[in-house]
Image (cartoon, rainbow, N blue to C red):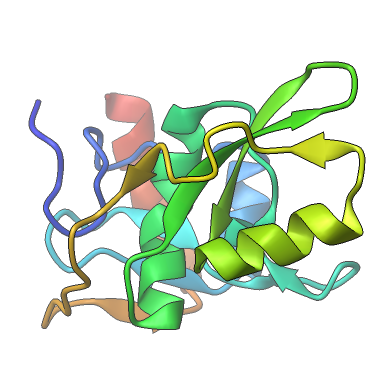
Amino acid sequence: MTRCKECYAEENRITPLLREEDCLQNHEQYICGVCGRCICIGKDEKRNVQRWNFPFKSLDIAKLYLRTADFTMKKPCGIYEIFNITGRKSYKIFTSIEELQSYLKKNKDKTCYLMKPVYIKDRYEEFPNTKIKFLNKIEVERYLFEKLKR
């Protein structure tokens, strides 16, 4: 399968990854105008940050949320490989190298050896059929059914 030119995913029903039904029902969704994939773009109420601000376990998972960062910031954001003091690796999306540097200053137990993105799009692009909204019950059920069929 080819990668979607808008949301960068190879599967159009791969997200949400955790607590699918709860996420689709209760969080605002970025709906890809090309493939229809839903990506959580809502804020985490406890941390007051959007889902794309979280650390991710793998580059592939981070890529699933990158489009929401790009869309929110209206520019290409980068995925950076971050290591903690024990050597544990995670991936985090930043809007710029300056934002990464600020994060590392505040988090002395973290480092980024490359100091450049391991993945970033060349340019930001708008797509005409993109939607940002809360899904209704029928849309949630249809999305989950389509995901199950895969």
